[in-house]
Image 1 (cartoon, rainbow, N blue to C red):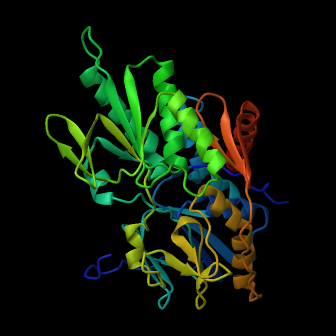
Image 2: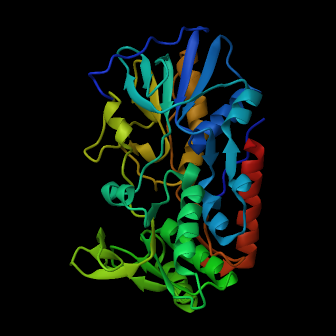
Image 3: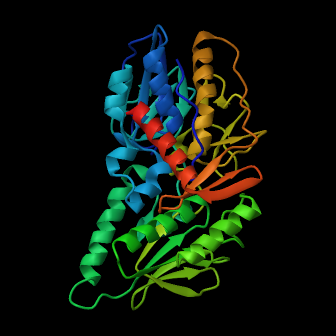
Length: 403
């Protein structure tokens, strides 16, 4: 969940019969599948410059969207829920976009239809997919209340707060207050931010607890410069957060308490684990009749297109380029939005599509939970309050413009 700073907003079960499709009401039906940040920007821009003889529809499983870079700050108490959540109904109504709150489970280019879980199918002439990824190890975090996955982010805070309330109701009764053991699984940017922001929350509320960060690789923050990793590692130690590298958590057992078990069979006691590991394609992509890589992510070309006839685009976490590779992050989704906007319009108007060129360097900031941020840009990095102020201002402005 490391934040980069977004650009300013510019002037299926085969055995079940599908319900009848919604009737067409315009010459061109453009359907956005998923409430990712790129799609929310498209909705915003549509309100300023809609296409004639076209209707834009946003399909989302939730009526609210979460701005991922602010999520750790909610955990640290820096933001409340309304600060980082975007009301899709209000946004779409203001921008003249139809909102369909349901889960897309099928997409058929041949029939030009998007199938939904409960509502009638939606016809499309041009479509785009911005669903986001899900954490790896779904069988573990789906079946254990002690394990809280960061996705779906739209209801992460509610799920976490419910579990914390249960945990403290069980453990912090009577005179003695036992030390609670919190785990964060995943040593990437999201896991590091969650660990630091959780520690800050525990510190401010004076809860007797310890935090441990587990990473499957040999180092935290893979992909970041070595100097940056060292600075953050020293800060984690200073804040009393234990870092366990080369610990691939593969199981969770109930035996005289809750234990996380790594690939070597070693067990670690925990009371609550935040799951922020890896990225896997959402299961619904299996019902999308589109080209995919072996890992299940959608194959897109330089124009962000995974299907030419009819035009179907994919952006954000679910997309994997043939000739480029970018981190699966909110920042990458935002950076794809201007090109997606241009190519959606070009596809409707019959114009040539433009090519995507990822940025060589981008400023990244990690929220440290205490009013400071760790920043990295190319070979340069540091920790400062100024970086936090800059990140906080950029994040708030981004969400306010969508709200």
